[in-house]
Amino acid sequence: ISETELILNVRKDNGEAFVELASRYLPLIHRIAFPYRSSLSETEDLSQEGLLGLYFAAKTFHQEGTASFSTGKSSPAHG
Image 1 (cartoon, rainbow, N blue to C red):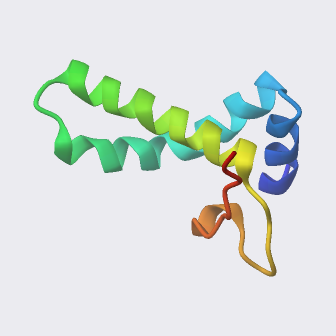
Image 2 (image 1 turned 90 degrees about the horizontal axis):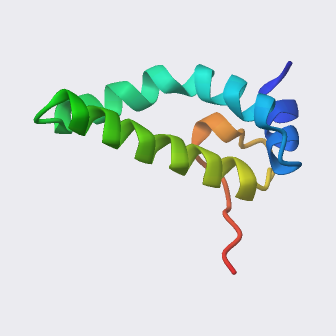
């Protein structure tokens, strides 16, 4: 399933789609969190924050032009 299809399904509150999306991005989240940890539990907390950020990004992503979700060029809807 494509990333775009996963995001559309996450926006429809499909939990399985988020699990798949998270599994694709978890290695990146861990790489970003790792340098900021002072303990394993702190790394896990930072990773949880990263997953929340991923969920928010998927729920608010609006594809514009050729930007994809993975480029980080989403236009979140605030409000």
